[in-house]
Length: 444
Ligand SMILES: *Cc1c(COP(=O)(O)O)cnc(C)c1O
Image (cartoon, rainbow, N blue to C red; front, side):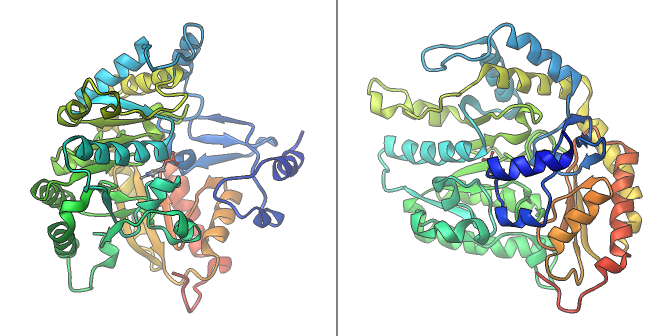
């Protein structure tokens, strides 16, 4: 079977996510036959560099032999067992290691990012209820925030395209200005702007803190907002405000956890301890769906009681799946064994030198990097830029999914200089091509 026959079958049988299916009348679906390292191969042998880590989940490449071998062993030992009333080695070891890495124990497991958000919101509210403050039932998130798309998670998500249609179904929640430096006035530094946005947060917490259970944030980078990288100082001060007004801080590390921003977890760069940490995406290296919510002893103890209803009676069928936990343990082994954070740091330094011609290109704005994320805005990009850029890059062997006129690279950590060089080369050739000539009224 060739590419063409797979893609027409997929169009008929599969309802693809985050997609207007009619678009696929003109935009082909890309059938992938196999993966190896940073590369994905179609059925005709053409390869694509996975510049989005398969939706921000892959860390150590496709078909990584170390993770593959660990999973094969686990498959022959125990694939899954109910976690209510039963336990198993991978889930215990993973919980212990996550606690050691974060200082927060009591890992509660879910199936994906959105379920982690749901768990953290419910747990925060239930904590306040168990401690006699049931009126604390409201949540705060940032403008342009993204925390998943189930109804609870969408209530604290602020991406209009995902949210507006379902607005009548959602709970009201508070929104405060994002510290995204792209929103700063020309006369302000990123830090000055971030400090200014904290005034709105403090006003809200001072006025409504009595009714607010938690503030949920994406530490350091609002990825879905177009890789908005903001100063750690904002996070540090927001954490202090939460403490002051007795509001929980939920760190949604689903996209930025596991080394993506240079530290194991992004919030660590602000030297804070959140009340909840949501983990998913990279946790299994992109192998299997898994999420974990970590919390403090204080929260855990507020549920520990003779009364059943004071317990956290939330569950997902695949909670703590043994295979997924084995993949996650292997990911942590690789971090230790291969000194991934240190290796990534030196890669980042080298890649930024390679990126200089792109960073200096006249149509490239806000060129930015944190850890293993690079992003920039394209000036005068014109209508439909993200779609056109996706197609043109793909034709040149590079998988990118621009957000509006923001182009970003979020590669598996195993990318090498040649792989990064391809990104730079492809983007330079696109920006200088007639097809991408500047368009007077830029699409925002
Ligand atoms: C992707 C993402 C989610 C949702 O995770 P899913 O697994 O897609 O449900 C939540 N928060 C952040 C910050 C994310 O990037």
